[in-house]
Length: 366
Image 1 (tube, helix red, strand yellow):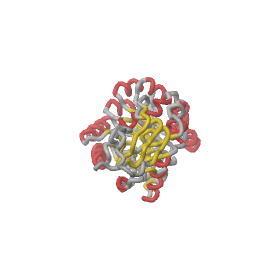
Image 2 (cartoon, rainbow, N blue to C red; image 1 turned 30 degrees about the vertical axis):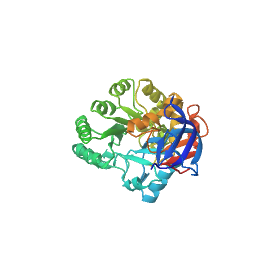
Image 3 (tube, one colour; image 1 turned 90 degrees about the vertical axis):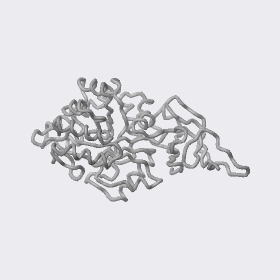
Image 4 (cartoon, rainbow, N blue to C red; image 1 turned 135 degrees about the vertical axis):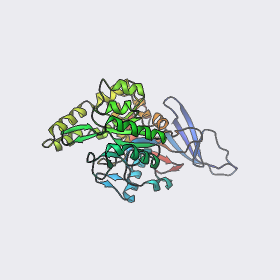
């Protein structure tokens, strides 16, 4: 005997940017577009009305991490709940020292795709965040984190070199090649934190799958990314903090400060050039370090400010992002993870900041 529908959703269901349906149902926590039978005398399912999107994707955040390092489970829970309230129901955790696998057993918290713990060069990253190692150990650590993660590994591609007083690449080419090959042997994709220009060519030519931030893209490297199909996650809400960071380091590292201001000044131009070239662009906030969670709607709006058309910016947080991460959207039989809005988000992405309802695993949680 089939389960009775628990929800009936009416209005405009955005299965894709142009695939719009008038209704769907939730049956036993999953989506269907076929009207379920109703037994005589049975109560009709609850009805939700509005514009419906798949649960939003924050493809770069950190659950279990704050500005000082790992946090306790209570803080991790609050971070995940904040994302849920914003409609972010699929998170790619781009590095965390905390074990958050207990979240997988909570039906009321977003789904997380983990990249394990950051892997950085010794004394070349934020304290308490990463495994800090030397190049000869990179491949072994990448292999270990690939086995611990959910199909991703995160390395730190560049950071400030205090002797040079500026951003600099962290790894020699041979170490990157060994590490990426090791990850791919384990069936994992590799992404890298990169602010500056210098590390990008080596990473892409070595087979990297994604680059976080990517503020250092230039006319020379944009075509290379496009040719290899390397995705970027610009984290523009995080890049907005560069001027304040530069001010704080001005007296000690003036070259670094000037570089950070330059990267910030051309951030929108950089993202638009990447999109124009056909580079896959996805939404990520970098929440969980120094930034609050729940900013995915603001990140979509930032992509629009950069010149990406609204529907493509929206896709970067929904349909194409879920395809990229191998998770279903609003397809027949998919888990019922979706968000309901008052107006058409394709017309104005600012509505993403005010969801009417959030449904996770078939339950209305907002």
